[in-house]
Amino acid sequence: MEIWAIRHPVSIGNELSIHQGQDPSAPGLSSRGFIQAFRIAQFLRSFHILKIWSSPLLRTMQLARVIKNGCDPLLPIIVEPDLLEMTNGVVDGLSLTEIKKKFPQGWKKWEQNVIDHPCFPGGESIKAVAERGVKTMRKIARLSFPLPENYYEPNNIVVLVSHGTLLEAALACLAGKGLGNRRNFIQKNGCINFLRWSWLGLEVTHTNFIGHLGDTDFSPGIEL
Image 1 (cartoon, rainbow, N blue to C red):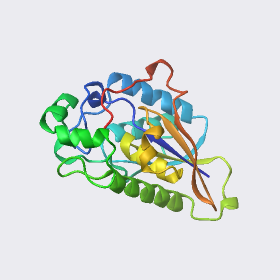
Image 2: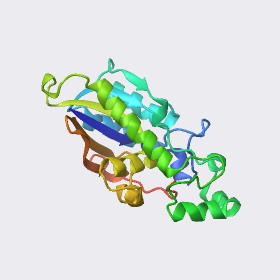
Image 3: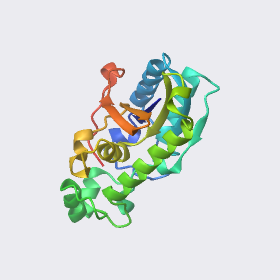
Image 4: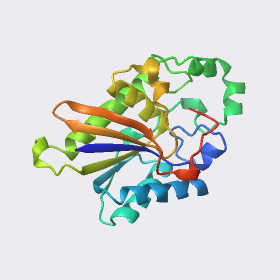
């Protein structure tokens, strides 16, 4: 049984170098992002998808709906608030230039990968978002595959749609590498991370796969 964790495709905020975080007014996918979403759905069409779990933010729900429509209109989409992106409080919705100008100390902490404390007022710490991500991904695995491993067909897949920082931090922990190495688990827009759920637990087998994106691969100007 497998969990495929996908970062949302390119959003308008990504292209404008805006930190979206949990800003509910953040715009959705850009035109490039929708092309990526259709390519993700085309890639997934060859596999047996059981259900889709998604963060409730617009940019993730748009991908979830494209996957549903492209793979199987009967696929259930389960909205999971704990898949929300990390919030950095007061800087959610600000551009990279604004963040550096208004919160230079917070930006310095972010660049230094401060883990235990929020970098910006009202935000989460990297440690907190990692714990939330790991707990939620394990919950999704348990709820999706509650019976013994040999009960299921070998190619059953559950899709999880979330965000870059949450996935980066959670995958670093699940892979046993620690949050100090989280940036080795960089998440490109539209990438797929492959995890296996077995009696050993939730194992990370491959991260940041982008072979399905082709010429739509995109590197955002802002990492947080």
